[in-house]
Image (cartoon, rainbow, N blue to C red):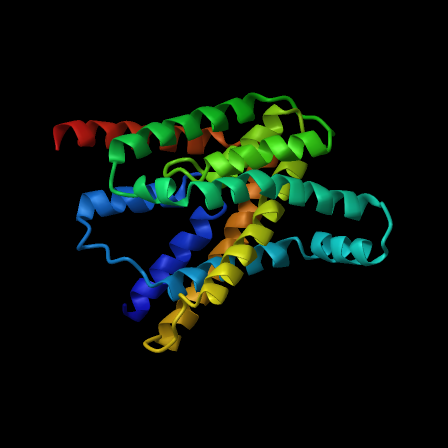
Length: 264
């Protein structure tokens, strides 16, 4: 992998982690269009570095929230920060269960089945369109809401279902404030990312023997900067009900993928 490839992959990761277009779905479409040999699988180390960069960008954007949560936890009181932390933990449960019990089944779906990806992109589009039509409220995410949003995050492990799109849309459709829905969606994934990184480190699958630290660094910086921009932009878009444009994009790409799968 050269420097430009690392930068491009970093930008793509940073943008698609937050924009509701499904990074996994687009990767599968790219493989199918260009051929598996044309889009080489990146090393686990590079993937971990990019995910760490986007998680870090989330922490930077929501640094005040993160700091308040940390302070609240160490006060050992049942305050708003502690309650929010519990909701984050509740939201993680479905994804952890699905990831542990159905890891092999999920991996089997990432095999260039572009008709399936196209169908999931259309489902993402429907969710985004419905969320855009929802009325504004001041409601906060409840414990029950957190679990339902967590189920949406678990379903978003399927290629073509956008994680941010599914979780934000589900939260808004449950009647929650749009800005609070986006905030919760982005913060709820941070522990999962760090948990996955820790799992990869402990398993011994990560190897730095052949690592090119220049490309790793460039990919990290690109993903971090793109993540900062995309996260901030997405919050503004949700607040202004501008998700329909992403819904249209997902429908067009989804239909195209399904058509291509039948004629190829």
